[in-house]
Image (cartoon, rainbow, N blue to C red; front, top):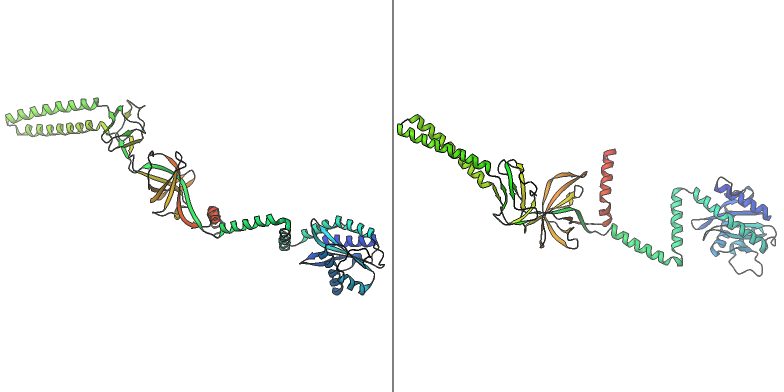
Length: 443
């Protein structure tokens, strides 16, 4: 009957009435601890817990005696009963007579309330009856406590949960848990309040400080290739040789026309024919200019390295005989001693970086060696990379190590001031949430 009730108060009243009827008591009261003291929630036989304030205070006091002593308190106590404090029970017994018995109500490892019995005959409640009552209360008590907590308002549930946690932590056997919580609180304070060095990272690659692109000087064909990517070259070394047959044929044609115009010029000079003299002279000058242009093209047919360095791009070894047009990129050469580092920084972090900031670079080829770098330039325009806007930050290696090559990739981290770790970890999420709030509601 008790468990089947729809509310906590009804269940407690039904439980009190059943106990009173079953044990032949004058009155049974049920109370639960609230703010450190027992509060009467139900009285048997339809009694109201708000009818007599003085009586309720006395009932709460006798329950507090049983709760504080964590034991069943009976008054008058039998001769063989262990000593206990019965001041409140004695005061209530003087008021109304009869016998009294208060039994703590336990849920789990906590005393959450008490049940108080009042009977007309002092000898009605013997030890066997009390034992039976304790068993019944131990079975129904946890159910009543669960119903009570479920009906509490949210703020009271929070207060109750905090109080229970404090009680459990105060137990002697919870010493290790208390130490762990203290350590966690200290760690949390470090994360929230103490500013630590903050770094901004991104993918990085090494490039030559100077990159010279070698292009096709004119329309033609690739004749020979003397260098491939990764090869070290010296200044003036021939890297690519273009086919010269067409240019040589063109040169002979213009040389022949130049000879014809010079002969015609000499003949006109001998005849004193001023008109033909001027015409042949102009045609001879045109032929000379064409010859000079072809000679320049022949000179550029052998593409040389502009400085000592390494070829970083352009494998033409499989393109011998392939046609190329003027301006087509053939090779890219970079110096071997001067490098720059390009770091890709997300747009959400770019405002934290300034020229002169320092950081470190870890390359995939040398993961255990951190190269110190210094920011020298920040590209003012973003580039879309895999759905994100990326700014390229140019940095300089402070102490370049031997064995570095343009094209090596890794990860760079740049120092960006100080801030709490928790803020650094959650900053991107907070930024995203702020933008969404602004987009949705203009907050």
